[in-house]
Image 1 (cartoon, rainbow, N blue to C red):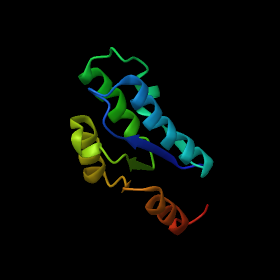
Image 2: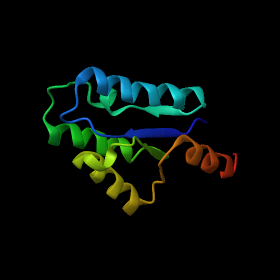
Image 3: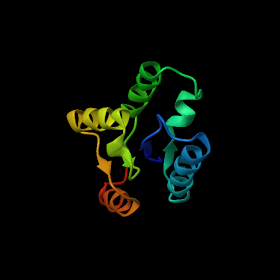
Image 4: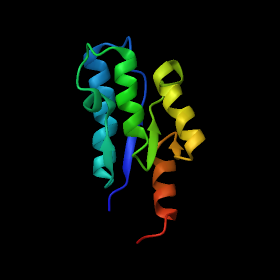
Length: 111
């Protein structure tokens, strides 16, 4: 079964095209590595969505994922910091890069 990996990074205040590309690149890389990539832009699906409504959708989704990959700009995002705090509290692993994610994945027992 594919592991679900959520992508966390800065969305609010970012240009739509750049943001879409940034998340899309990571999504493709995750998919190419055999993961089920969970893109928050797809989860929310509406650029005009209020922040608190978008975060409720994202947090609900994060809690159903096996791990979270961090885009480099996540520390500049109030929402991503909240997502990571929740992961820390719930024991959902977070990864700074694809190498860390792959090493973790390779160390997991297969069912």
